[in-house]
Amino acid sequence: MSKDFAEVIELIRKEDPRYESGAYFFVRQALDFTLRRLKSGKRQRSGSHVSGGELLEGIKDFAIEQYGPMAKTLFDTWRVTTCEDFGRIVFHLVDFGVLGKTENDSEEDFRECYTFEEAFEYPFLPPSRLKVIEAENLDTDETETSDDPDETADQESEG
Image 1 (cartoon, rainbow, N blue to C red):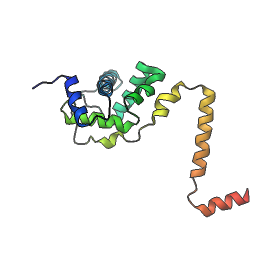
Image 2: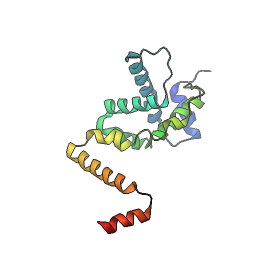
Image 3: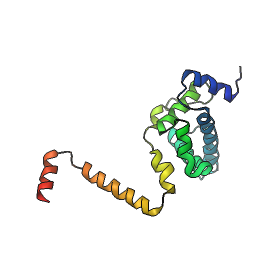
């Protein structure tokens, strides 16, 4: 019993309508893109397995290549806002027999690889705006370094 991809997506969306159909088509295209890139890379690959991390990098590169600064906007319309969402889409496709997995593959492979802002917005920001963001991140990192409230209070009273 062979169903075409669009029919499988309809079945998936009946069970979990969270993501638009376009997200599933995009993941399939991004997987093909990733496989081609990995096979043509420095390390020749014999198999066709792609890890979660490799797929996420491929998704990022493919999205930027295809949609440029509109990638994040498009993902928002599909209700895909995190790497974990891509993991859920992949595992829906696994559950419906479209994609395979190894015993080591899990949705955890798609957790916290990158933020969509870093991946799909920062590459298109002017350098002056990136410097502001980096400075803000440094300020945030410095305030988070001390977990001891007494130490923080001591530092503030010394300054």
